[in-house]
Amino acid sequence: MNKNLLLAAVSLVALSATAPALAADLAARPYTKAPAMVATIYDWSGFYIGINGGGGSSHASWDVVGFGRDGSHDATGGTVGGQIGYRWQSGQFVFGVEGQGNWADFSGSHVGALFGNTNSTKIDSFGLITGQVGYAWNNVLLYVKGGAAVVGTKYDTSFAGVSLASANDTRWGGTVGAGIEFGFAPNWSVGAEYNHIFLGGNDRTLTGAGGVLPVHVSQDVDMGLVRLNYKFGGPIIGRY
Image (cartoon, rainbow, N blue to C red):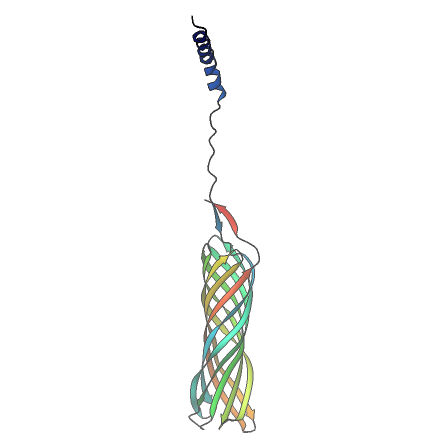
């Protein structure tokens, strides 16, 4: 037999004998489970601090005590301030308390029907102490609020640009409101809010170079605010 053919036959027999062993040595590829997807769940719980700004309008009705209705006007303008509060979340419900303080310039006037004087009011500051109840869809929070309000107001009556009598006061009242807030980062949220302040009627005595003028002024305030908050703490990391 040809020597080369003999060597080829021997090699073929050897390969056939070792093939099962080689196949056994090849381990089956292990199955690797895909990692679970991770979703960020926004948590509204914690202390927060923020700033706000917007505009408002106060409707003021003047009566001169002993004479009757003297007219009314809307005192409008802008406001800027800040807030600090705490929220805690239970499921999708969010509860909170908040304190807010603002500088304001809600100014307006009318010419009085009784004496022809210009009667003016200006709200230059206000504060709100409120409780909140809200419902959250992850990083979107819709809430209502209510509590107490304190408002600083200036009153003035003038003629031909010359002040005749004036007064300042700080009045307490009630407030209700509603807002929506959007968490755009683990610690940051932005929102819009509406508030109404109930002040009712108030007797004031205006004094000055023109004498004494006792008045009864009824006021309510409506305002819209844009808010930016920073919350201490981060989101909860959940799985789905």
